[in-house]
Image 1: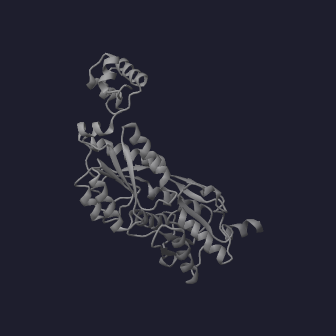
Image 2: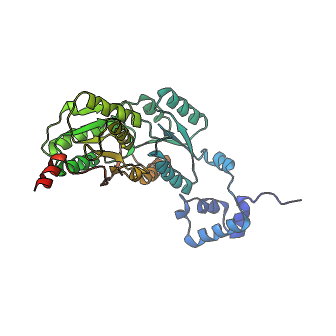
Image 3: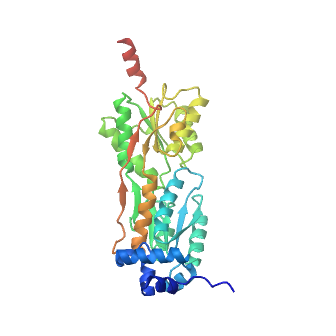
Length: 349
C-alpha cells in the first residue's frame, strides 16, 4: 500500500520542531518569527519529504480563503496585464491567489463580480474599476478589506495606489511648450473616472503654468479610454475648425485613435500635429511613429496594491485614505517635433 500524503506533522518530526513552527516557517509573511537556521531546516525537510500545504485545511484553520478578488474594467487594455503580474507576484509570496474578473466598466457586471467574490469568501479586493463616486465599492469596502489601483474615489475613503497623473500631464505640456507649440489641444478621457478628471484638471493647470490660456474649443471629451473614442474626439475638434499644432491624449489608446483620425484626414504626425499619450503601454514604442508618452510604473503599482491590501488583512494599523502616489516619467519619441512655425524659422535662418 502506498504511503499517505505527507502531513505538516511529518515535516515537524523530520525537522525536530513543533508543528506550529513549521507553519510559521513555511509562510513568507510569518517566517521572520522563526530563527533563520530553524526556518532553513524546516524548508529543507519540507522539500525532502515533498510536502505540499493543504489549502483547504489551511483555510479551515485560519478562517481565510487565501484568495483576493481583482476587478478589472477591460482585460483587453494592455495597461492591465503588467499590473496583474505585480499583484500576482506579491500575493504568491504570501500564499494568496488572485481571482480576476472583467467588468467592462459596467455597474451590473461589477456588482455581479463583487457578489461572486463574496460567496467565495475572498479575503480582500483590489479594484481598478472605481468611478469617481462609486457607491458600490464603498459599500463592499465595509465588508472586506479593499484597495484601489490606478483610480480613486472622490472621498478617498478607500486607499489607492495611483500614478502621479498631474506631474505626468505637466511634463507633457511643458515638453510641447518647449518645442514652440502654443495651440495645444486635449483629447480627454471620461470625466466620471478619476483618471480622466485628474488629467483634464492637470492639463488646464499645466497650460497656465507655461503661460498659455486654456481654450475650451481645443478640448474634446471621450466617453471611454479607447482607440475609437480618441479618433471620435479628434474628428470632433477638426470638424469644428479647431486650430492646433499639438495635443495631449487622455491615454495611449486614445492617442492611437488620434493617429487613425489624422491618417483619415491626410494629416501627418508629427509634421502637422504632435501627439503625446499617457501610460507608456506595451508596444507604444512600436507605433508609427513611436509614441511620446508618460510612463507609469505598471508592475510596481500592482505589487504595492497587493502589499497594501495584505497589510490591511493582517491588521497592520493602516487607515483608510492612505493613497500611494508613484512617480512618472515622460518618454520622448518620434510623435512630437518642433512646432511648424519654429521649423519654418529654423529653415529660413
